[in-house]
Amino acid sequence: MDIVPGDRVPSTAEYLDHLLLKYAGTFNLYVPYRIGEKEYPAYGLFYMHKEKYVLVREVNMWELRSYEHLIFMETQEFTEDTLQEAKGLVTDYMEPVLVRRGQELPEPNHMCSDINVVVVCAGPVDRQMAKRIRGFHFERGYKLNMRGFSRGNIFCVSLAERAYISNLQGREKKKLFMETFEDLAAGRPGFAQVMKERGLKPFSQENL
Image (tube, rainbow, N blue to C red; front, side, top):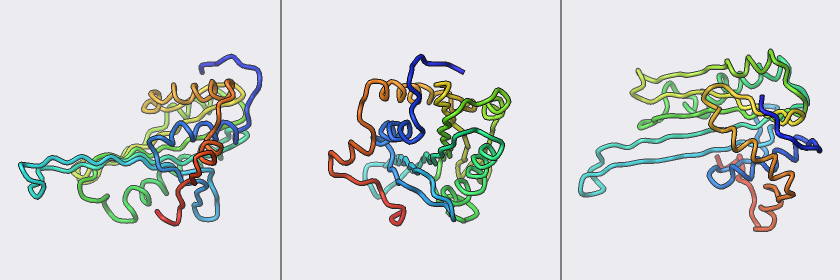
């Protein structure tokens, strides 16, 4: 774990508010987001669409669609239940519901879906739990990857330790999570304040 010096430990709500602003530039953010009987702080969706044509738009050589899905969680302590909930979100909800939309396969031209659970934890994460987060692996291909694939990740930030923990694919996100501590220390505004100042509202789950 990489510790960043600092005195005041932010609350999970404070940290999440600033983290959401980091994602707001590229993701559609749905705040809050309900799955069954449980309400989560937020869900983020990023979508990229690429096409190649021959001379005219009507002759389409290929089309590719990539997605990144994020579900945000808050917890005071990272326990076995927290880990199982995060894993279950990936395998039992995000992949079948958000990627395949309840169908056998994703949409045509689907290339890749990253399905990530972000856990903002107030307390420290013990070594055994950190090891299991790092060891998490989920990947599913569709029709021998002809219809693309999904891969699942768990990103965890410990506010008490000012540490970021993830599986292998999530390591590239570390800078973003650590910079969020710097934004808090510098007193920069968070997501809610910026949205209010600009007269904007998060996306509604009803419009998904």
